[in-house]
Figure 1 (cartoon, rainbow, N blue to C red):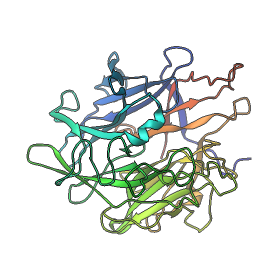
Figure 2: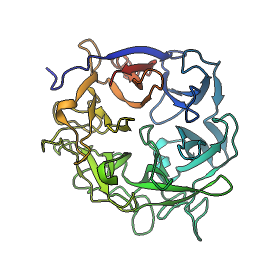
Figure 3: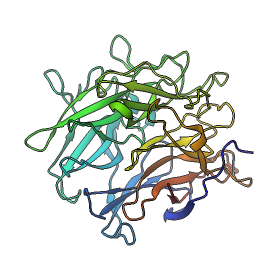
Length: 412
């Protein structure tokens, strides 16, 4: 029996169907203005890990009741230096200006291996005054000040040696009280020579940090970054990964991160957190995230999302494992819970299961790689999530990627 009760106000429907066998669609949708019902939806076609084959886009003017036909955003291009890959990371309406901000991870991979991104990923952004229909401009995110350019965009990030990126859709921007836009990102951990380094021996190794963007008179953003949040390779073999952000009582910022016990399954697999009392400029040393009552919980290496709600609550969505996980697995059950606004920890009594692995489904089921937002009409929390690998591996031992993008409606 699972530890947590099932949420009693959840419905699930297919939002975007897989176009063909062995292909998954991962979807998300975003409001494009501060107060209208205009939406843009992204459907990412995937047939291998950490790769967007192509991204489809469609629009709605009636809060998702009807949609336009899908256009395409090409996400791969052969170049003399290798394959240029793009990973869209969603849209964001800045509440101060009403502008629509689009952000994506981009890089050239010499042999088209996803792991080459640890030395080549950078972030780009675009700004729109009309809900993303046209762009004022698009450009790479580069730290302000002398010595920084497209090849050396951030401190300790040099293309070809290290990277910075948004790993998943839960890394949502947040506006600081002074109008500064905060984007939680991850960056390749580097050695004394500035080269990507993996001291934990896991699949990858990254640090976390914030990008801080201030609007300029020409409508661009001037960027700089916070100090890094660095894990201990003796406690997390992959460092700190895929940070998500929210503001607590008193203006403190909470960053919740993915860690890993990859290659060391005897270590406890935890979720991690760090706090900032100065608007995200500097951060506490990361520590295991716990319940507000002091109890600990296990969590696999998977993405998660903090969702600040209009009534002041903060929801957390992600995976809590009933026993110690092994690296990424199991990525179920999928849960929702409320954050204690004073301590920044998870309130155990509020945790509910949204979805789980059924008795006839594969233990490889993945309930992750999701995005959640508010529905402005119904007040529900909408969850976009694809139930990957629900069927067992194929007889030839290859993975069956066939999966539709689901839409969950959650009463909160």
